[in-house]
Length: 480
Image 1 (cartoon, helix red, strand yellow):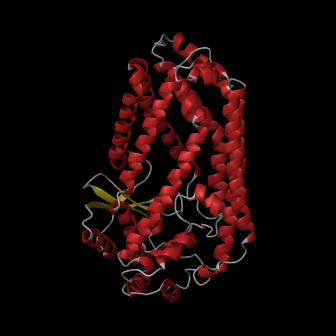
Image 2 (tube, one colour):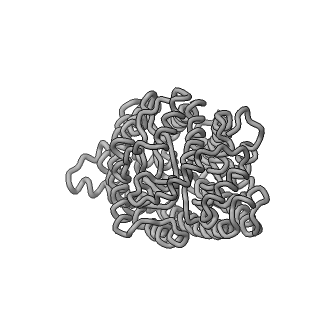
Image 3 (spheres, one colour):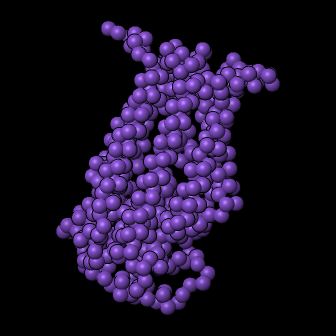
């Protein structure tokens, strides 16, 4: 039976890795081209949405989708070319040798590999920051600005970027230093200890994220007392959801895109609403009283059909289709949170954590088989066998195809979870309101509603809008 060494001796690991990475990129571009063709050829609003999405908004979302597609193509091509050049011309070994020499010059311990590894990561991170800035700047200040989504100033953008870099480096330093120590000192079973550390560290980050990390980038304000807070608390109480805190995050200083999520462990759950999600933002200083009264009347009604809800919404808000008033009503936000409660009810987050941790353990076991193989280092131009380089080569390059397959399976599972959460909201009597809120969110975010099935199967963690509406419109046990 052939050993790993025998197999590696018969192949050029670098050439095979590059060939597979280009194959993955070509596949991704093929999928993107299918979606682009659908977007170009779909010139009219689908019949199921014709009464709820205006032609102007549909056209704007179509052009936004095409512009994002073009941007994504050139960015992906550049990234692939950059990676190919760096690997083919041995730039990674040059950076590693420079890192070792620099640490030795200033009398840092190079035998443990920790200091050279931290220097290596710092240099790569800075290079990635510099090389990625033209793309990031264009995306933020040209593409997103063109469609009214960017709300950042250049000063805000620079501060945000530097904070992300600093936080990423600090966390990376901890993970890299500990992993190198474990791998070099734990023998053949290092993969178990490495996995245990990664699991513990990731849980630690989840635990501190809301209180210490997220506030570094966004301002979180407790949701004031009022109709929305009362409705959310009543919803949580009705299903024994352990809601502890309600926050509004001022995402509008960064982007006009909207979102909402639950967060927290066990009985310490939090609800976070982006201010861009709220049609009637309680934090807004200059609120229009007449709009509040009209909104209150709308929230007191109980529509029976999706089209009827949308029609009543249009009658009370003539600017909805003109996209002048964005966000969802209080009842629609409650419907969205009913969907999120479905994820909690069915333990979707816990299932995702278990699956991801099993995957990480498998990957570390594979690393255990490969990290001592000299062929993978020499193929990439290294004359030594640093632990960090082994981690990078195995996880980022050799696992390329595996990561694609695993990603596809997780995307498929995610879509299943989304349907289950939608069904939970439907069982709570929120089907029609959830359907309207999904349509509004697509309008506000200019999400193109018509998708290629193969493209969406690989790229959409959430089912396409039309598929979700179809399921929501099926007969439910309750009616909102």
